[in-house]
Amino acid sequence: MSWRRNLLGLAISLACLAFIVQRIDFHGLLHALETFCWPFLIYGVLALATGYAFRILRWAVMLRCAGASVGFSTCAAPFLGSIALNNVLPLRLGDVVRALVFPAAIGVRKVTATSSLLMERLADLLTLLACLALGLAASHGLQLPAWAVRLSATLAISASVVLLLVFMFSGKLAHVLAGLAFDKHKLVARILGTTRELLIGFDAMSRWPILIVLFVLSMAVWAGESGLFYCVLRGFGFTADPAVSVVVMAIATLATLVPSSPGYVGPFHLAAFEAVSMLGGTPDQAAGIAVLSHLGVWLPTTLAGAIAILFHPELFQGLRNRIEPVAG
Image (tube, rainbow, N blue to C red):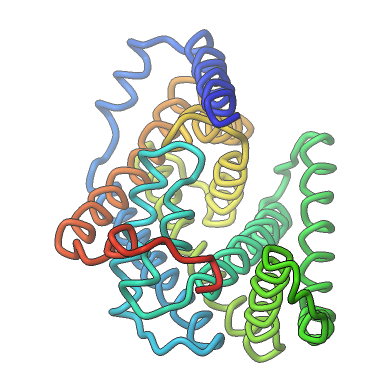
């Protein structure tokens, strides 16, 4: 199944890139890149770095809520390392490594890391959709196609329902599972035990004061990411207000949910291309913005993660140890 998913992702990436290529003139794209004001890319990467600092802080907060004794410095290397692996490996394997391999190096239980990762993804989805809605509201005259509005509404409602269910029932369901006994069925008992531990983690992270903190940190995360897009737009001569860059960022980032080759090549570029085209940019400008915004997100995070892994080889000690159950 994995090779089929990889093949599908590659096909989607190539189709997205082919769609862009047939709409641009390469000489025009090169001219757009030549006229780009490159210091803006540096400013954008600094904004992105600020956003990633808030990502690391948010992960540390979630782990501490679930009982782990970690801080910002402890979480930085495994977080950045997992992002780098996500950027170069298929199927978001970096997330799997952060949940199941890296925890041993920082003294965190695998089940705690897994629950924090799932909560992180849910928070990101809700925050991105909120950013998209706020950006559109603040951008005069900018509208999405009807299908995109319906898709965004569906995602927002689904994520909100999941978060509400987690908030209301995770603790209660964990209590119910604790009362079940399957002593004669070790596999069933193990699965139920792991599920219970996940629910306990969700319950600890979904209390109102924690949710408010996570929402504030998530907004700071995506403000930093939007800063990169804003700087890239400015570097190409766009005078759009920051709300427009939030819309472009949200659309491009949500497109990474689509299966693709490693590094989200293709869907990210096509989404950014179409978003900039909606703003009135030429195809060559839109392609240039798509290329540089992706480069600005992908290259610094990959390098930072590679350096983190290089200087912290102990992160992979979990692979050298005896394989443990997820709830180990």
